[in-house]
Image (tube, rainbow over all chains, first blue to last red; front, side, top):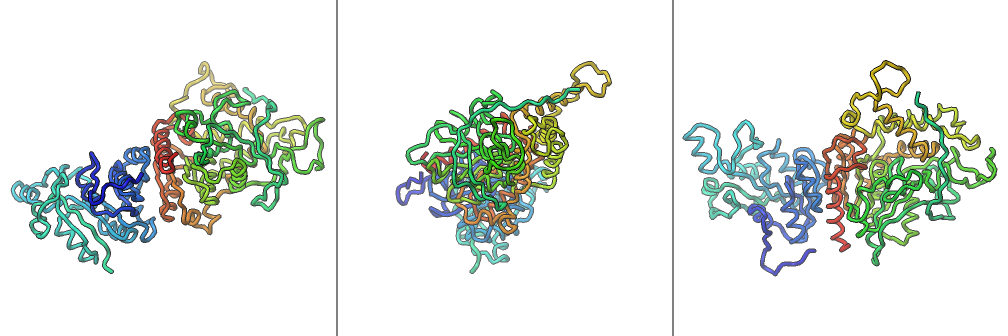
Amino acid sequence: MNAEPPQGVRYVAKNMRLDLRLIAGMIARQTRVLDIGCGDGALIDHLSRELGCDARGIEIDMAAVADAVARGLAVMHGDADVDLAHYPDQAFDYVVLSRTLQAVERPHEVLRQMLRIGARAVVSFPNFGHWLVRWQLLCRGRMPLTPAWDRPWYETPNIHPCTIRDFFALCRAEGYRVEQWLAADEAGRRAPWRRSVGLANLFGEQGLFLLHRAA
Amino acid sequence: MAMIVAETPPKVSHQAAHFADGLLLDCGVRLGRLTVAYRTYGRLNEGRTNAVLVCHALTGDQYVAETHPLTGKPGWWDLVVGPGRPVDTERFFVISANVLGGCMGSSGPPSPRDEQTAPGRVLPGQVQPWGTDFPPVTIRDMVRAQKRLIEHLGIGRLFAVIGGSMGGMQVLEWAALYPESVFTAVPIAAAAYHTAQNIAFHEVGRQAIFADPDWEGGRYWEHGKVPARGLAVARMTAHITYLSEQALTRKFGRRLRSGPSLTLFDDLFEVESYLRHQGSTFVSRFDANSYLSITRAMDFFDLADEHGGDLSHAFAGAKTRFCVISFSSDWLFPTAQSRAIARALNQAAANVSFVEIESDKGHDAFLLDEPEFHRTLAGFLSGSATLLAI
């Protein structure tokens, strides 16, 4: 357990989704991490195995929870909208919410809880400001269907779509400091628009943020 | 009418540890002598790190994974404990003790009382049992007795404490009372307190025993009797609460035993005959006063109340890894109860896994063939064992 990979080389788990690799890259070794909406637990598995983290997860899909627990991961069935309130202040170093913010009932409340129970929050979400989304809405006058937004409006779980710009605005309004941010394509490859929010908002398929509360 | 026939359980001797200094109980009484009957499976490793304590439910006992000496049936958790099973006896050293108040060799109503001078008569050659004079015990008393056994076996920290139903209550109490001695805790189909509904069902069972004239005010042994009808009715009532409506429908539906003649007393529906069978086999292996004693202990249980009314205080600073498991069709200890435990553990920032297993078998699902449950338990234990290099 906890075998140290060579210094300076970040181990990249085989078969782990690329966007999860980007998230793992924001997390320091030997820290306490809570992954909200952890799915089958791929990220926490990686964090505990390779980075020696005390990584735990919450997942709403019971079958995924059973899978993760059966693989020895500390995962509990729960709902981000209600269960975060039961954690004490500052219980974690990082609280991760990957591609789930747009699907929760009260995104700003979930964010507030994340930064209450954790020192830092790592948030990723599909960017509704991507050019293809804008183009489809403009030209066809119908809700967009893209690789990132792939379900029709009447059955999508994504009830709170936002753009990268929207998210910056929310952070300002709530007083969160953006420590790192980047835009990525759907597969999670890092995109080169890190200096321009406008370009990132147009060409990035997903946004990834590392936040902490302003002192 | 099918009657329940009284049958005195045959005497068998149980492996046991004796503690001459007794045990101070929550009720304030000190048991002069403490006996803890137990069984073990597998081997304790050199580091003494692989011990697993299995806590049994209300009517269970220490015969977890072997032929039962009274019934001749397989152990009650044969599917879960054994070589290659989720609690793998090739890997773990499994201990199970008969609870305090029980009737399989541990100190309890049928065991010899401290003072053999109490009033009343005994049959020739018999020692005087405690009977209803056995002091009321709590889940915490049961756990304290088990702790004595664990120390006696030379084990400082248990790798895991596992149990379903009342066994799960003991698991929670273990984690609260001896956090340093529990590396992982697995409460299954359990609750942190007994609800009014739980207590109500138990009270029906107790009243059935009291109403049986053969109970003889709790001193039935003096008359060579067993309150078989009362105990059987108690078991029948309880058994209904262990099953879901779907399970009863699937097993019996409205099927009839014989022709559809309208009779009052005959064993008409299959479900009746099943319950009567459950009742009559139960009385041949269980003591009525033990049933009273243990149901009371469950009713008393309220872990939050033991910690200032806040369940999370019971687990403050806990390093134990928890795996809370419930079953979707369990209406006796429903998932909401397990969720409350998981939330309290979150509040205490404890390491907790929580999963509800999809099953239509009701509360009894933890005893039955539920592959998803077994896979989850095996995975959790195996993952935790790697951390200790077991």
